[in-house]
Length: 626
Image 1 (cartoon, rainbow, N blue to C red):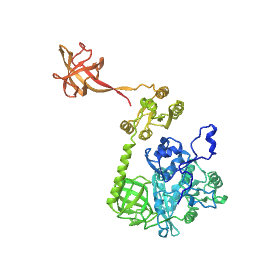
Image 2: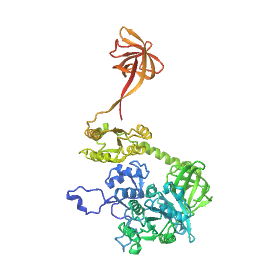
Image 3: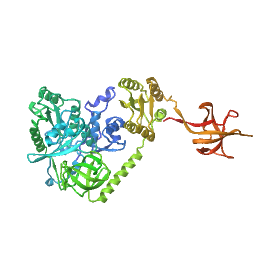
């Protein structure tokens, strides 16, 4: 196979080639070309975006990817979709039909599992059941439709009638099987793709006839299109008095999903999931589409598949729902799932019946893994336990090395200007939390106006509510500071911030907040110090020495007393004088510190007469607040 002469690294723009010469600054490209794999840094350069933008998108799908992490093409496509940039494959000459030069020149997107299936000999491939995901707006009837199809009452067992988990189910229609993925929304559907799992063959888009296309419906459409799968529209709730099927079809047409009845290619099926009208027609159309798409796999080939969900069950231990996509998974097989491994001790179908083996497109629940894997991770079968353990250990070591390499330096307002001067930073990233929407908007607007020639202010995330651990995680990855206005901070977030060095600043006055950030951008912000009390000592007796002045014989009550520390002389809880520990003795020896429970002699700087038995010497240090 030979590649086209066009440079696969080049960025493709829709505009003419000489646009950059008209004096206007060129914006981000509308499309780029990416090969099978690309690092986050390289992808950011091609997209003309900051790597932080990409890392933030990946975090939304549960992927903590450092700047040097390698992404596959499918994950890069998801990032591009979120940022409004189309990610294309390199042109392959011998896959272009000469008679259709204007057709889409991208080869079909492939991930690991698709590559394995593509390497199978054609004579060994057999048809497999299609895998169907059901997406749509909340409360448009997705779970009710699946309930009708599989004859299992799921809605009544779920909180508020909203799907709370991700599962896989298989039904039989006219002697042929269909595998359904029951997802809580397009986020889970896309998160699995972002982890390298191309699971679904088809998407059933559920649209309520009395409600039409809603924002979540549009998002589901965009994610389904990005996955490159066939979309079948199920127009639900047609039995309601205010149902308007024509309006739904018009809405679909505006989303480039023109119904077949109107000369398009999108299959639309009017249904009522509640009473079952049209559901059989929907299933028949699914089988027709599957026959046209010709989904195949080798049941005797290398066994690979994807994790649909996993959990730690109190009675059975770690359970994982796997979808076999090639080969056959058998009881007793050794498997590797990400950084976890194990032997399949038991297998069950989605109804809980024991299984001995599961072929392509079959969902199965297994026991035997040593850890809980992430949904969307790919599993593979190895020849024995030793090979599985070795592969999992190697992946753990790789992850540990990557974590050490990509450890971020703490970011504070104080050191921001120094990093800018050294050319290490050009953007001040901020995670912002406020107590109300009415204060959040003006703060964001004011911060965005603080940009100068050297430093830009970028709001990584702004929201109403207390500061959480997820905010700290975002700040860690993006080297941001966290600013809270009139809000509290979760205990877990505080612990993580202290461990990672993320700075959290609290404000009650907008003017002070804006002034501090503005001064940081111009290098004028003074460090903030706070007093940290290290110990208390009680004066028991006074001694006057020839050269040392007045020595207080003391008992250290708590903490530790250090020489040269700052000190306050307290009497009846009132401060008599603020001074420092000039000398510290244990018997006749000079020492640097004395801990609680021990006697010592303390000489306070500048104190020669004003000491009484029972006075308390409070010792403290001034520490810079990070």
